Image (cartoon, rainbow, N blue to C red; front, side):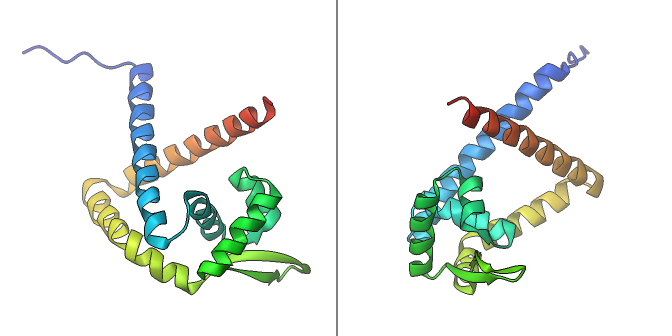
Length: 159
């Protein structure tokens, strides 16, 4: 019986990056549909995700994180407030500053869209992988995010 040849690290990294890109494309397609269900555009949904993941941030921080101008972010925040998904609140650390946070309405709507996927992730991943393997996957994603941040910065500086 012939042994399958062992794959090189370079080949494995290529396959991993390929699967990571497929995952990103699926995420993008899902977000497009989710934005439609929420009645917002994709940029607004992208900003909602940033706001929710950060636990709230200033308009300037949101602009920097989303790669948008401060003027564009003002429009985004206005639309998200009008939809009832975000609100402006005083920053508890500095009452002169305003932070943006998501609302309960967003969480209710998001639960209908992403809740079933979260449950599927939890059951499938918990069944398939050990805690140690999940920790390695988290390490991979954090490393991939660091690489992404470095290269976003590089592209912004190429202008």
